[in-house]
Length: 123
Image (tube, rainbow, N blue to C red; front, top):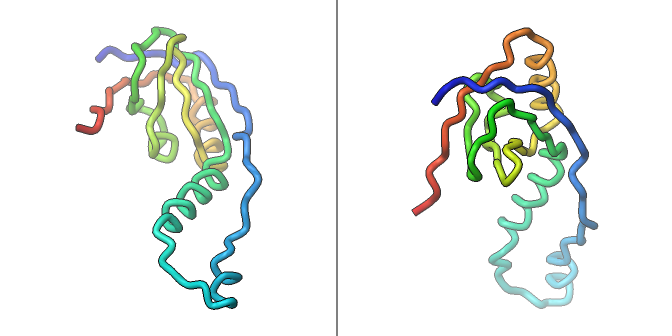
């Protein structure tokens, strides 16, 4: 795939939902026990919402087709979760504060070219 120039980036905070308390201890106190099968998934989602709190949109010079991409040439931290391209050709991803700092430092350098590599959808 040819190199694509990154023209700019925009950042907005990720909208956070109200965190619900974990009521497992409350129910155990009253003798209501059981297995909470969805707890690990809830904790993982909560971690992702809190840790990857920045929604970053990259303005690309050449539009890409809709899908999931890895943009080779970006810092490692910025490529951990991949980038989503929807209708307009801009790439959107969720970054941590450290990843955003690395990406801004990379944008400050002169060479802002990346190679887009499509991520195969799960079978």
